[in-house]
Length: 227
Image 1: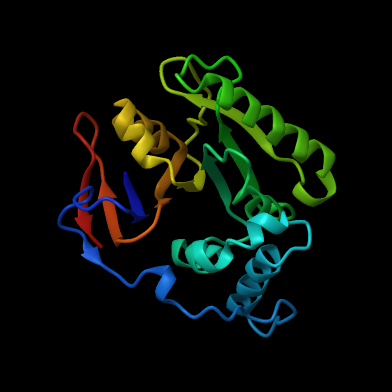
Image 2: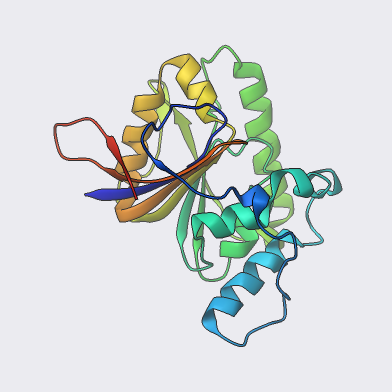
């Protein structure tokens, strides 16, 4: 089974040997016309632009767009409105308020959130964040659609899908936490079980950009190869 791994990382050497590609931060800031439907590719770009520009987004989150580049990042990962997408640890929903509306009609959005029975050292924060996230998607169901919320806490409460049918797994500003907690490999194993053959794992922080194709064979460790 092959899994594409596309990652934007702030820590050098995580994926040593992968080929560098231009960062989304270096791409044009101008978003396509959200009304353009001249071709399927244009339609997909317009749908993403409409989600990024959505009036439902928290103004404080939109104020960070020039620094976090959500349109360019998601375009780089190759997201499409009809995908099944799992987001790991969405916290307050900075990206969820883009992803869920984008996928509402033709795709499926799964939020693999903190566990409500967390035993982590940040358990109080995790539980508050999860509760606030669930309250918001319930209050704004017309915007977010049918969001599936599951838990992902390795060794405690891991409900990550294992069906191998997800088109994409995304996570933002979390990889360093899993490295620090010593669960990075276990997280990747859960991701691997969720993704379909050739599925994409996109991991974003800031800074250095790497684009890799990851190959894993039964009984071996995950390895990365230049795409």
